[in-house]
Length: 261
Image 1 (cartoon, rainbow, N blue to C red):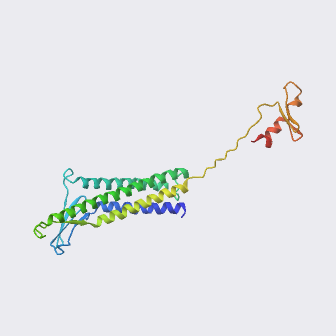
Image 2 (cartoon, rainbow, N blue to C red):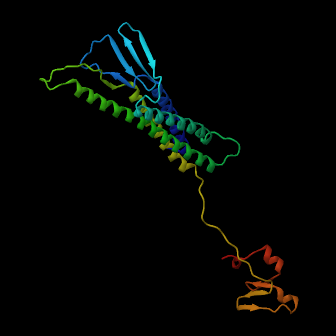
Image 3 (spheres, rainbow, N blue to C red):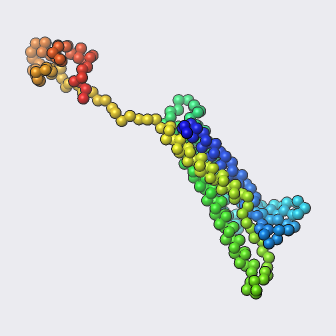
């Protein structure tokens, strides 16, 4: 898969996952009433992160928001915080990744800058997906714990007869939406990080270095090395290569193979 295709697919998956996270956070069916022991009921209850609802058999639904913050369970507040942090990071990642797309040219932005922006947005998407998955998993663990505790309290030691009827809650549709959305955001972030490698320009480590003679009084011959004193005639201030004489200006304009190492 090419770099541009990988980047675009990761961007689209991240947008889809972020939309799912926003939808899951606003949904009311995080926990629904368990109807295993009582399939026929006149009242159906379900709860979300922000309000609890009751739906009657007549079709009338009444929802009551949570008017308190300190009175809510600590786990519920932690789930709220994780989902909000994941959404905020996802929105910032979307804004950064728009300018990092290779198919979009903005001014004279270089590929190295786009690579850094792509990597930054990919990391944000990964953290956003992990926050969403963690928040949904924490809420699911809380539901499982409360479910089995309610089941244990329903039975007494008198022949296993049911003495009390308590409302038990099970997984709602919002949990599955949150898991899928968090996974899509995580995969999109990984693909953005992979696309970053293809945007980095290749650099060569070879650098040519030229070395020149330290002064004009050095002459090279096939027979060996000869240094002049600088007080002789002007013909001695010439450099000789391959048996032919050249002036100093000619040597500087036409360097030979002895000038490079």
